Amino acid sequence: MSAPVAVASALPRRQVFRLPRAQRMADILLTARQVFCEKGYSDAVLAEIAERAGVVEGTIYRYFTGKRDLLIKVVEHWYEEMLTDYDRQLEGIRGTWNRLRFMVWRHLTVIHNDPAMCRLVFSELRSDLDYRDTAVFELNREYTNRTLAIIQDAMDSGEFRTGVPLRIVRDMIYGGVEHHIWAFLRGEGDFSPEDSADAVTDIVYRGLVRQGAAIDRGEQAVRRLEEVAERLEKAAGQVTTIESEMSRTTGKATC
Amino acid sequence: MSAPVAVASALPRRQVFRLPRAQRMADILLTARQVFCEKGYSDAVLAEIAERAGVVEGTIYRYFTGKRDLLIKVVEHWYEEMLTDYDRQLEGIRGTWNRLRFMVWRHLTVIHNDPAMCRLVFSELRSDLDYRDTAVFELNREYTNRTLAIIQDAMDSGEFRTGVPLRIVRDMIYGGVEHHIWAFLRGEGDFSPEDSADAVTDIVYRGLVRQGAAIDRGEQAVRRLEEVAERLEKAAGQVTTIESEMSRTTGKATC
DNA sequence: GAAAATTAGTGAGCCTTCCTCATCATGTCC
DNA sequence: GGACATGATGAGGAAGGCTCACTAATTTTC
Image 1 (cartoon, protein in one colour):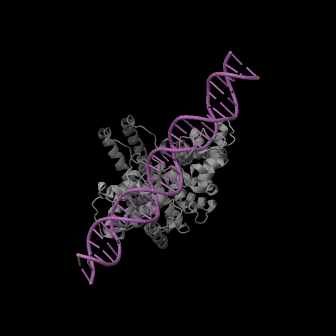
Image 2 (cartoon, chains in turn brown, purple, green, yellow):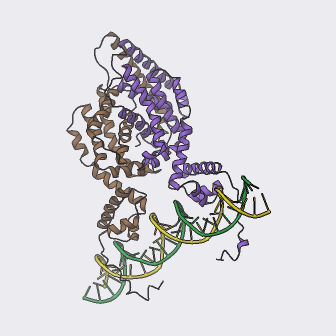
Image 3 (cartoon, protein in one colour):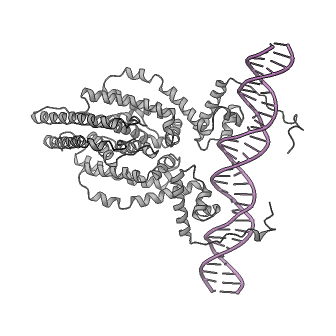
């Protein structure tokens, strides 16, 4: 309507406080996290985040390239703080079953404690076409690799049978858990991390454990054949992978 | 620029074709499906759907209450056509292992054939807070219940041990599959429905099967020997195909 | 300690997209 | 061929993400 020059005093600009970059960024991140969790990504409005953070909308764009970037940064922060002292806890646990169970239980507990955040990760971030470029992808990989290490150890020691692709096991554990808690994430009822962890661990453990009851002659023969097969597989695998190794680009794990 | 009254003849209204309700609805649904699949839900624009369907934006709102409703209807249609003659196929399959394997394989194949549609279901629809009210929810339930019935039968017959909550098993199968194919859905690499189905079925079956009861030792030994034979065959195949290995492009599964 | 330089912060407003509604036109029925 | 039911239109409103020229708080310079 009126030229800003004319009535400069009519619109007194709000008192402006300049904060150090890190502080302002942390404020916005915290507020964004709250709003995202309350409303979900697409219903969250930048104007509200700005207002609650005590800044104006344009300010957000000085620290983040856009709404999506804000979401990613929020999740990254959460992930990092969540993974702290993970290993330390795991160190105190002995035995394959217990260690596996701990990993599953821990995952379930995180979901139970922060469902809104998990919703964001599962339904917004992971379906993104360039999820792979996210730091969250890398952190998640680290996270699940610990479980794979437990299984690998058990295979090496002979407790688990070999020949089962590790990736599938990981998928069944984490995918199973995720599928299990979707209803909870949608706000339908509750679940018990303890009970669910028991059930998941049980199936996985039994699915992988080597049956070693009484070893009679037949059993011995079969086992020897299995071992031969395994050795042959390894040999064949080595031979063939030498050729193809040169063209291979990325690693194995993904989610 | 100019008042519409003044130059009424200057903007000749496009030739209007009036279609029966069902026909127009089908046209819009088909176009919407294409656009949703190409762009994903949030990047799909109603103006484009309208244009491609040969109508104007407002017309869409005569048949659907909004963008979200359009998505749901699109998915519902797809789901229904997908579930046709499911049971008939399953009838022809005998044995718990084979039947389970068929269900997993079938699911993987659907995903493999129509990844874009699955992306919509997994990341858009299922995370919705009122997903439960969707017809898709009900259809999906039907779909997974067939798997549960197979497992229940095996428990009743004594082939599987009892005491494992059916829900968890379902979660591990479908969740595992889903987790397994996420990378594929994001366009990263490929996977083999056959191999993946084998691996998933294997873990689940072994996790549930009762040791030494319905399946006696001899039966078990034979089964294991068969597996050994299979592995040996594969290994032998690998060794002989070293030459052709160099032309192979991707590995097996990706996620 | 004042002027200059730096840069956090502002806020009006642009653009895209979903959605509404008053109006028009087409096919059908008698 | 006129009346009626309704398929279809398109201009415009509202909301929200994002930009940018500008303002003023803080730091640096001399």
